[in-house]
Image 1 (tube, rainbow, N blue to C red):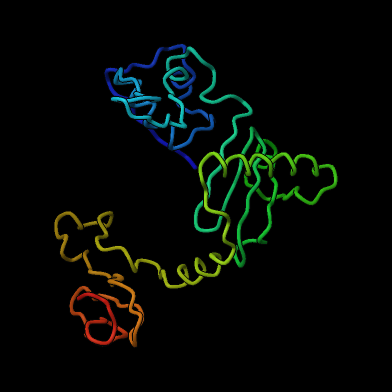
Image 2 (cartoon, rainbow, N blue to C red):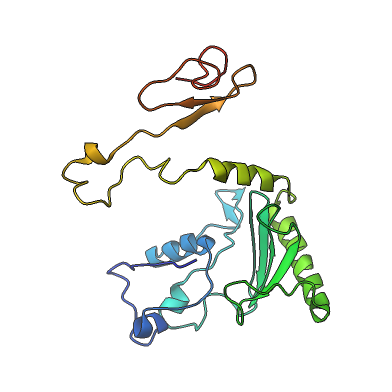
Length: 233
């Protein structure tokens, strides 16, 4: 995922740094690196492992500052290991290797393997190739280690169908309330604004999930959930 940054004026980048020379880098970084970077730029030290007599967990990310000021040629080691997961989907990465788990129906509901150096678009799955058997074992061990370190909830493939149902309901522009990018929107914002329907709660009785319409709520179990359902108007 691309990331664009404008650094503080009181943090000039030296001419020798990679960023100063090209303005672009393909260094791997995570959102967990942001807090350590900001603290380093501010000259503040994170208090881990103890703060005011209380144990504090250290941050998992690393500061970008050594890379930005040219004192290091990388943000993370070349074989840096990073895992992540959301809504039944998961991935583990080590250097150029990345294993991905995507539940059905969006994915095959098994771990896939990609070499990002030769296949940055993650098109050619190598997981079932005989010569990659040891690599797959290594990546699965790394995933298990990540789970133990972070307390990740075990994968839930059944969430795949839930995600599909959610996406099918997300009609384009349904959740956009203000089309600020269109010509004339700043001069007449009211003409480019609408109140989308929003979930108000989940009913356990007749009505099921209640929705709130921006202009008027309907107090039926199916639409507003005021009486028969449990949605709030």
